[in-house]
Amino acid sequence: MDFRTPEDTQEIINGLKQFVEKVVIPLEEANKERLYNERNYYTEDGRRHPEVERLRKMVRMESAKAGFYNMFGAQELGGEEFGPVTAVLVQEALNKHFANRKLVDTVVIPSPFTNGLTPVLTGLGDLAKEKYLDGIRSGEKTLCFGLTEPDAGSDVWGIKTRAVKEGSEWVINGTKQWITNAAHADYCMLFAVTDPDLKAQRKGGITCFFVETNTPGFHVDSVIPILGSVGGDTGIITLDNVRVPEENVIGEVDQGFKSAMRGINTGRLGMSGKCVGSAQWALNQAVSYANIRKTFGKVIGDYQIIQNMLAESAMDIYAARNMALHCAWKIENSQKTPQKEISMVKAFCTEMMGRVYDRAIQIHGGVGLSNELRLVDGYLEARRMRIPDGTSEIHRRTIAKSLLKGDLNFQ
Image (cartoon, rainbow, N blue to C red):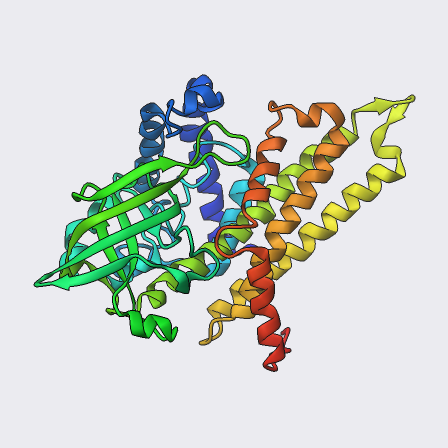
């Protein structure tokens, strides 16, 4: 195993950095009052402002033209299909240099749930691929991942949304909650119960559907503000006799969780790379401040308590980075999904990021609490990421179950 960044990957990173600096940052600077003032970023109902959506779409489409947007999509979908190690390294580099920026996050390197060529789409039939993929590849159209419900979060087998076959269509009724990008998505990858008996046995019975969000009966009731924000990216969806043609089934009927896991594991690893890079950004801010801020006649970096916080952050980042890269390497070099390792990496990296940002804010003192430094944005993002894609507690459960079954391998 060689964790040095390969030359071809470094070329991608260099090109991506140039793209962000030449295309994205100028857009952000020209629209700073819109993007970094919450009252302007959201409308009164808490949804992202149409102008924000226009800017996000512009970056997605420019990224697609530049060749970055579909780097990690499957070749059968028209993507480049770069592997997990490259994904971790690219996410790390992107966030190390451009953490907590509104137009960089999620739109240059797409989320497997909201943008771009998510692995879930490999389960689409040929007719659906021909109809929908061009718009998704170009960045014009976006997605949402309709799995979670009010009574089905960590225990996804608890979903109640039903789909009943009527002729050549499926009729879907139910409610979805905490769905990222729901208020703005053109399409929804929607999960519903199609065989209650199989679902009761936890042996299947849940199907994934590709749904156009403008279909009659598909309603986004509201968005859910979180962590003190005046708006939010997640929403509540009501499905009232939504009719979906049978050719829009993703994967096999009653086997929807296979489709779900294609996206979820990709998302967990990408999230971990983001955490590693963003934590490095925060540590860099803390080191720079510790070298210039003076108290009692000397810089605060001379004090042992500050040195300890910096050192602990460096140890956290080093451990998380090597965990993420080793896990990505295992995915690329094993026929079996390393589920235990994926859970360890997702839980550790998200928690690590929170610890590093907490120390960075503490080192900055009062100025660390201001919104100007973007440290608070990173701190809140770190806190948020401990819940989606499986809570830290669920991942510990997965790890422990693997251990108790005899999987004590750490190679």
